[in-house]
Length: 388
Ligand SMILES: Cc1cc2nc3c(=O)[nH]c(=O)nc-3n(C[C@H](O)[C@H](O)[C@H](O)COP(=O)(O)OP(=O)(O)OC[C@H]3O[C@@H](n4cnc5c(N)ncnc54)[C@H](O)[C@@H]3O)c2cc1C
Image (cartoon, rainbow, N blue to C red):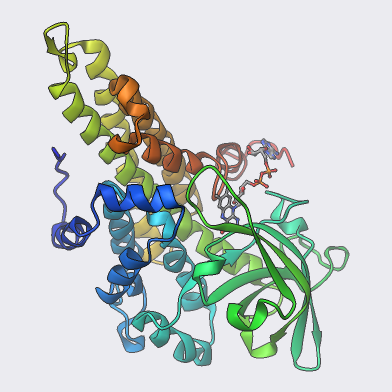
């Protein structure tokens, strides 16, 4: 495969990920997609190589890298034909625990997450009746005799069946009793093995991509008091920090996808002969590929900016949202250019284009939809009148 080179100071990291990815070629990802299974072998190899513990400080057994390096890891997985969506949860969930968890929680969980004994892959925020209007979520946690008792429902909660721990956002003070609607929400660590069958029911949602995602039903689930992350009532702020990390990481995944589409389209356009010449000689084929490349490179710059701000503990909401928007738009454009370049073969599973096409489409909707990013930038960055 041809490869566009974007030399940067992370070349060593990129090379290591590329070497690991060689063990999991296109055929592997195609089979995983076809059989709709979880890429256990790949995630295990990633964990053993220490990449899943990139963000965990060295004192807790991790490598103590920043979000920037984590984003390069996610990018390289997608750029080499894989799908980080199977494991990115651990990277961004980690920040919620790292930045807001107690010392006791960090000592208890982080070394086990670093060694691969525990996976923290899930985060439960979205609810069926409130959707994007997060502060209205209805799942509640009531404190009682040293425990919190949780009731409610969540939807689209990913990787629950391939995780040991989950971060849950629930309301601990009724909306009617708080000054700001973002107050009164709290974050909890849920031990999934204890919870499932004891107050938590998981129902998988079949969907367009091979993405394990579920409906969750909470019926008097009991969570020990010590599993509250940070202070009660401040959970929305903690989650926002994690969501900014998530947006920057997903931007990187889209950038990896974008480069992959441009690589594949360029190669096919150079090799496919129609009317006795390579189709890539036609500017109608060249220009959409060139334009996609320009967009991906531009999005890449905003990704680095968002990660740099996050790593320096500076506000990065605007940059993380803009990076995710630019990158998701660029990868979708590149996906379309790549599919069109391949003509009918773009639809054949053996070329992998249709799989990556479906996978990258998700990021127009999740973890935050395009409209909501535009509304954030309009109203929170540009100070336009609020629409909701
Ligand atoms: C495969 C998959 C995996 C997911 N994984 C997780 C997970 O692990 N954890 C989790 O918590 N969530 C997860 N999600 C949920 C995801 O974050 C939401 O689907 C997403 O935020 C959109 O919310 P919604 O589906 O409720 O859409 P809605 O809020 O119902 O919105 C529907 C549409 O209306 C638009 N819209 C709504 N309000 C406005 C407005 N005021 N102005 C303009 N447009 C508006 C939205 O942009 C969207 O296009 C996942 C979703 C999918 C599909």
